[in-house]
Image (tube, rainbow, N blue to C red; front, side, top):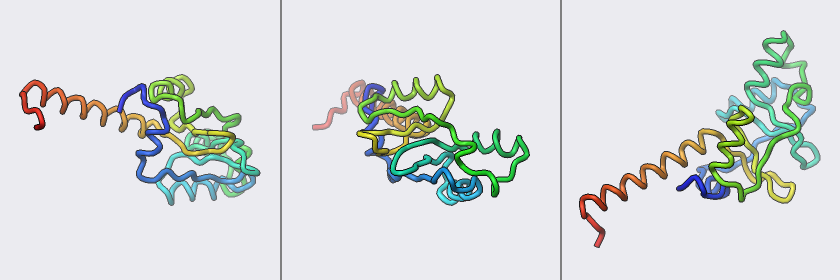
Length: 150
């Protein structure tokens, strides 16, 4: 569990690597309802099997609530972020962290051959890094104390 690991290892380690999405012509209300149901902060926007946008809680707060619009009357395509920044499964954990930090977002779609294979959240990356550090600390403690497995 290193910063140089490919992001597909992180996807494989997730308990559920499901791709949740909405269509661009669905209402924002339906999208927010789906986010709440699944306890997530963003949904991919897919049309004709193609990734066309991403909708986050931040989009909702800034483009619906603060603008005084109705979530039941506003369509996802009106407030989604597009084009979408995405990565291939071969990109590394540290590259993905850098991309997310640079663009100030917390969700990053992973796409291979024009197909979405998963979504990585900032929380997924932090969990990966912390697990790697815990493993390193444990190995160092074994080394220092001389308690080699054997």
